[in-house]
Image 1 (cartoon, rainbow, N blue to C red):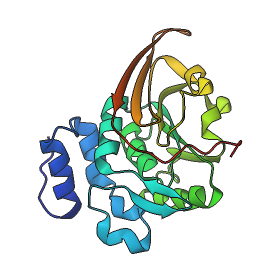
Image 2: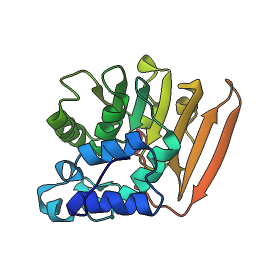
Image 3: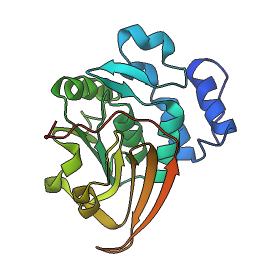
Image 4: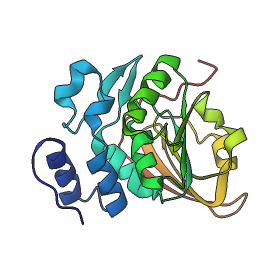
Length: 215
């Protein structure tokens, strides 16, 4: 287990550990190395270590750290995996996942808003994940996934849909896991076969809506 102090972001991480939201060493390590302040707008920097969602422009937010920790623990990302990150926004989840998958893995980040994608890519490359080829970025409708890069070991979605998009289920590997918001719940799916999924719902969350091409 990492030794953490109680200043700034590390106090936030320590609180998430004490309250049971951060559990896995690899995820704790990623939270410790990837500083949230690098992914917020300049006027929000003083709030980066507060456990709340923050606006990043274009009607979007960087998710609450508690929510991100909860979703990543469900997702169970591992070194060397290929992960689809839908609705990557300012790039924080992409960077966290890139740190976890390492040089043998790949994070495919999808964003619908061009300006956010470009800003998020710059944010992520502050840690050289783009330069090292660990993170790739695509301007696309995340509800359709990215079939040219499928199948994926894991899929993380950070914006809410009215239902689970079928293309994302299709693009998940057998044995793969997906975590996504549906309305005001977080859903966990594990693909048992091409047609069979284990599914669990965790209610009580709030997300911005997933932007698709019909909007």
